[in-house]
Image (cartoon, rainbow, N blue to C red; front, side, top):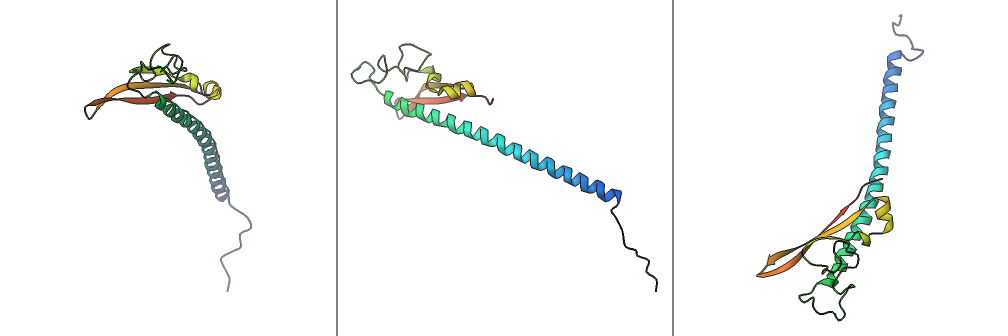
Length: 144
């Protein structure tokens, strides 16, 4: 009996092209994944540092909560009740309504590396018949 099947000695051109295309797609996917992980790690670190700065400002502003800013004995700030890093006003209460600039509280690294600026807005919100202060902190930054 004669066999009509013969043993192949090599690969065909189509197999080589398909293998090359699969290898190319795999290498593009892996390099994209590695690049994405690197960028995400760098961005995540920056977000972590910036969120810590916002938390520090919020904790710092708790010392300025008062109903009577005329009392100056043991009052925080210089002049009393003024956040020294607030460059938006020279002698205002740290929790006065309006926009305040506290960029000087950011580390030099964040200001230089990420061009970060930190502001906070104070508004009066009604709460059970009283007006309470609401503070919204915003930090603007950009990746280098």
